[in-house]
Length: 177
Image 1 (tube, rainbow, N blue to C red):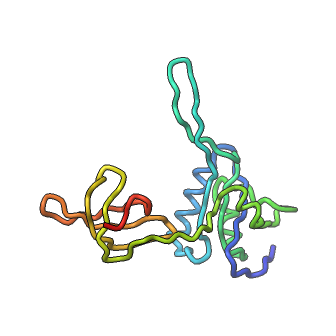
Image 2: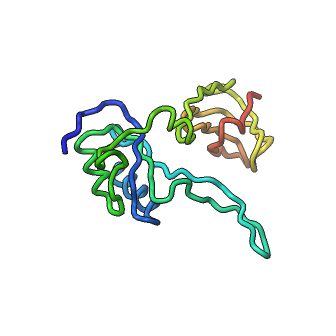
Image 3: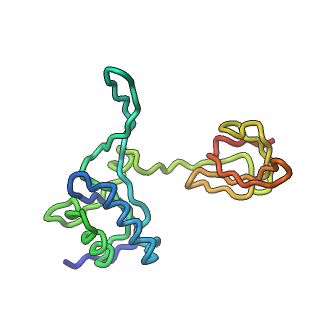
């Protein structure tokens, strides 16, 4: 099977044995890390939803797979990446006509909520003094070390007990002081 060498990462759906979704996702992530393929295989996701399960005694929240036996992979499709994903233990193949990988359309990706392309702007920048507004360190003041918009994280240095401690927080948990 010869695939054209694409350069744009797209979302593809792979089919797995029942119950192997987590194992397949973990295996692909390990292969990407071990072989340094972060520029070819960008993301691996198992879409889930949180539901409340009621029993006679209690209610508890559980995470349920939206698409059992399927894993989503954002990757640049070529012969090498196809071979790596296709031959991952537990993977039975790509979803598409005659098992030829068919990428998800932008509308399908948006409908599933797999990837959010919302541009975020924050009122603070690296070096600014900020106050933590939520979480266990609420009310603490620190200095912004790093802002990671795609991951929606901010790293803040907080002085506590005479020591500087790093804290990684969500962007919304911090405001300009």
